[in-house]
Image (cartoon, rainbow, N blue to C red; front, side):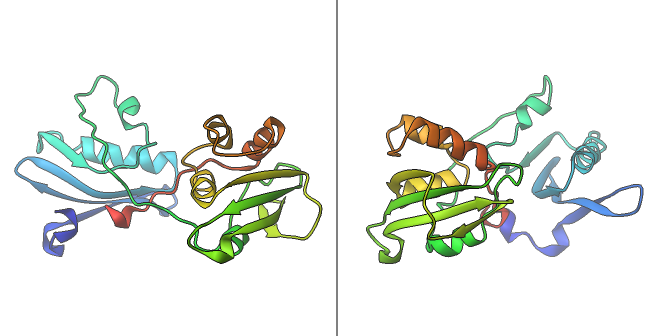
Length: 204
């Protein structure tokens, strides 16, 4: 398995910009004409293309490239007319343990105007997550407040986690009857959230 590789078996490729700044890296191993990519991290499009060009440069040495990726990465779309096989497997399950602390570190779209939401949350396991949380969304940050909410939503802790971690949009969860609120509130919240899915490579 990838995580059992010995250090002597692995290689690391680092992508540098023209200013000699590292913007990406790839950890890999070549065995039996197969390049196994353990991890590929890049900070911009230039580094992404550079690392893939590095893989392409090994075309005469390998017959196949294998690796893991997160589900929203459009790798099949990127590789035009390539012979690619994709499989989906269960990933890490997320859960918000402390709503107040979570919102305190949660980033939102800084370009959206300030707004206050009341979240009525049901959590059967953690009592401190049960109840109403009034959250101010402002200047790219969230904070717990006592102000009067502009909108109110009712949902379970599982639904809140799913929405804030970017797995499903508020609109999708509303259509699945997982959120009790108004259509206007759903549209407003979806404008505020980034909808970016976290990627935890250490789990692979």
